[in-house]
Image 1: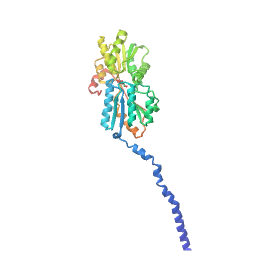
Image 2: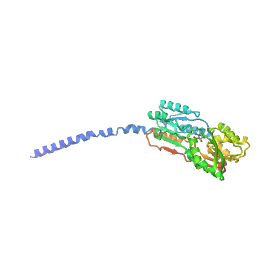
Image 3: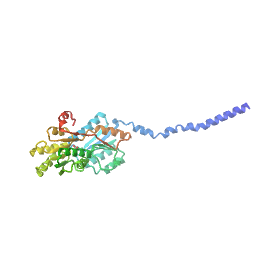
Image 4: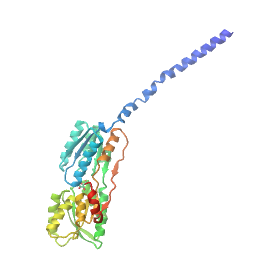
Length: 335
Ligand code: AHR
């Protein structure tokens, strides 16, 4: 009897062990189920030393642009990124598109694209997407759908235009006639600034004319010369889309015999040149546009390399500068 009981207990034990056995063999299945996480974890370990960042700069048209380029080069060196693939498109979209295509061919980690104009990017953005290379639109905007790129980091150009409009309203409280020296035709900066400015400008201020100076001193000067001839004695103010064109325009104003403050001038950027023009009395308000975008862009590029989420639109916080503080700020101004 006792032997029978003992035998049954052994049998129960053997059965239980057998029943448990498959569960034990299933255990290795758990890591198999989490297997896909392994490559993701490896991807999540990328560092700046792995980063090949494509930066097809749009040109070298202004002091702002020079400071922007320096910010990328200095940040790349400081962070020790593997390679900054830099090129200068000389304000030509076709050069930028070729540079982006070369970067795709090279298999860079991320593309940081400062688009010279808003339209015409869809095809090359699709090529980057197909090659699974993340794209950050830098500084100016593109008209392509936001699904075609990962993020935009830069200024709110429309807001800059609105701020410029508010400043012009304050400078010409009784209204008047003004001219506009616009940035590169079709660029996000020029389109946004012109729109915001018009939305804010008081109805008693009339824009008599608007011409592009392509964001350069060299082109700003003759445009202002022509305005001063055509509208001699008829204009009280000027909205100029950047400090470089303003500096060119000031040369034209001096040559035409105008004195500082004769033409109430609102500019954009806040470069050292703009600050000096405020100290000298030629610019009455300078709306800030910050070019030091390298650190933000590279931080985001690393996140994208590691598959981390990023914000779709990162706008820079900017202010307006006035002549009363210009002299004090000028010595420590970085760009
Ligand atoms: O896109 C930014 C603009 O481009 C700056 O206002 C101008 O100076 C530059 O050339």
